[in-house]
Length: 366
Image (tube, rainbow, N blue to C red; front, side):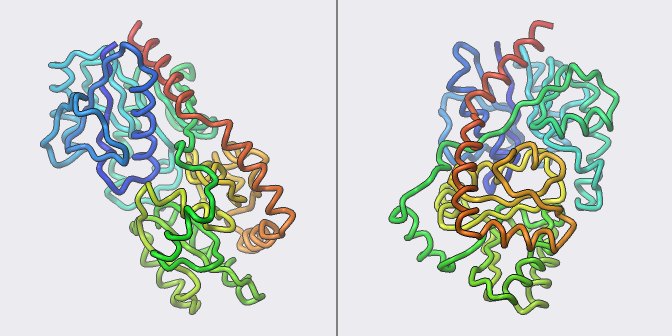
């Protein structure tokens, strides 16, 4: 097959969808055999691991992704004549000259539009239309698949679940391999960790409230919230200031991929009480590093975490507080660490790539 692969999310400062795109691409190149893959992107591609310079790139030189997707991308596809085109971030050309596979990571734009800025909400009709036009839809959890089928009228057999996975770099590390990161970035001696975009959907105000209660009861840990400062950042920062926790709650911003494994290893627990996720990739990254994990019982997070994580009601501050306290119990922490490593081992990017290739083959044959 000739496979056109949408690389528009590979632009540096990646978050979940960018990591999905990069890790899947690397594995497709490894397990793809004789298949030919070329990249579609409106801008130059940036990845944490280098890609072969021989990998063909089409469409570069157009500033706006949404406009490029509906205008320049179809012409690139028409000229290159791929067997299948995979669009990795929820939208595709509505007039597409190639059989299309579409990845939709979640339906939060439809279910929780209040958690998104206006510019994102404006793309919601395009997501719906793209779902209707794709030959096959990939999503990353059974929970996300149920949401898609509930909200959009498409045949259920078109929608396939392919789980994400932690990259191989996420693993338990020795103390001597991480301590330099602590010193350089002035991290607390003991801290709890969140990794993800700083935005309303991540439920960080309630997390900070639960943490503040525990601090008043003598908790010695700090709280480190790592991720790009998106549109919810001001609310989070002002809440920290209002509670007088500027020294205890740190907002260091975006951390590059290569530093994240050390960061996870330095933390004592991982806290991810998000209100809605299609998968929740940081949960399995933390588990692969052997961290005890607290996450939400809602949407895909319970499915992804299985029995390994401690699940809480993300809308109940007391539930989050009790969960953190339980997770930090010495025996419970040891038990959860063992369960985390076992659960993370069940996810694999190589398997995800093989499952994705089978979907491509089915689409290309029809």
